[in-house]
Image 1 (tube, one colour):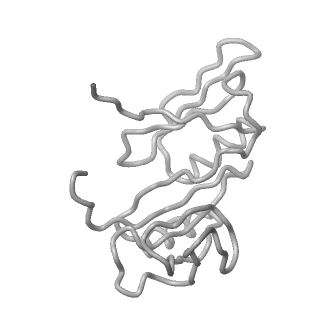
Image 2 (tube, helix red, strand yellow):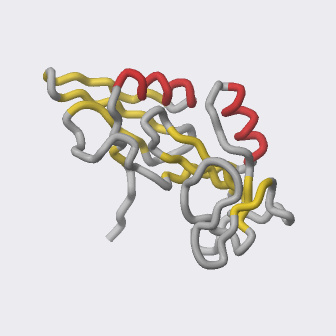
Length: 157
């Protein structure tokens, strides 16, 4: 059986504010449909992605901002940092994980410890290892995104 993840529901408090943010981020607007006063669906797709996001009215009972650890993959984290900053998106500085290649958690600010053997350090990974560099940002409701640099895929991907 083939399963493809194609849509993530984001909980937001203000649909128009969220729509403006994701447009500013550069996501492609696919749908903005209002069926009733209690149902509106706004659907966006990040450039190059087969998975999309949807938010609106009547889509979820989750608390606004409760979606965390949403990963976007980029081929050049420094370039992504520069582009997002130029678009007016508030992003963290680029960081890497001292204990390995996979960062766990979404925290803004300085050094954080997210578990055994994990320490968030400023700057690019010393060897610029694929899967080793990150930056974070949040949408206006606090839904947390992580950009991860992947220049070479692990086998089997």
